[in-house]
Image 1 (cartoon, rainbow, N blue to C red):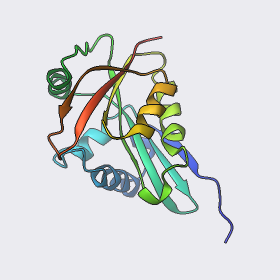
Image 2 (cartoon, rainbow, N blue to C red; image 1 turned 45 degrees about the vertical axis):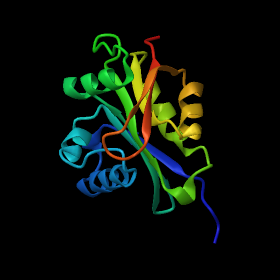
Image 3 (cartoon, rainbow, N blue to C red; image 1 turned 90 degrees about the vertical axis):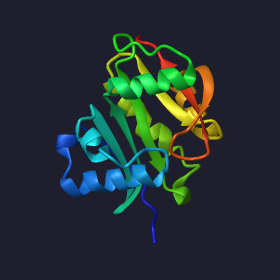
Image 4 (cartoon, rainbow, N blue to C red; image 1 turned 30 degrees about the vertical axis):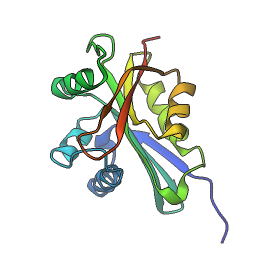
Length: 167
């Protein structure tokens, strides 16, 4: 069987089918870092979402989110850093790559177009402290690590905050 290079599809959530949104939500939940309650609604309200597929197989997802004030406050409290809605209106997140598809630079392929769609606006992102490959992707996209580490509410991991100022 011949392997096909992964295809990345990016768009506003309304441009995807209900089944594709369901697949997106399932992948995000598989990452174990996001609460299930209200996730589908948050995905539908996102600025943009991205999928990586190879043939018919979904390999990974990512989103450019419009974070709620309460979510922003939770991250500020955890990281001990200010996240002004005026200077950092968007959040890059919901990045999940199938374990079998990792080490193929898919996080960069998913995140690069989302950062581009932010049109120079400031963006923040969080990542598990033990996720070096994601940290490298964020750094290559112009993010800087700020604040302190804090414990995740969803598992036993610690989180780190990354910020990309408006350009």
